[in-house]
Image (tube, rainbow, N blue to C red):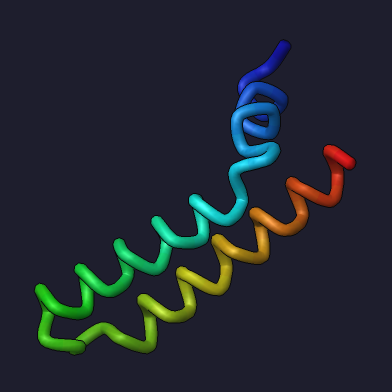
Amino acid sequence: MDIVEQIKGAVAGHEDEIVQGIDKVGDAVDQATDGKFADQVDQAQDFLKDQLGQASDQTQ
C-alpha cells in the first residue's frame, strides 16, 4: 500500500474534523501575520478543501 492510499484511508470518515483543522490553522496564520497574507491563506484553505473533497469522492 502506497502513502497516498494510506492517507486516503486515514481521511475517510473524518472530513468534517479535517475541514475544522484547516480553518483553525488558517485563522492562526491570519492572526499571527495580522492578515497580511489573508488572500494566500484563503487560497491555500480552498485548495486543501478541494483536495479533501476529491479524496473522499474517490474512496466512495
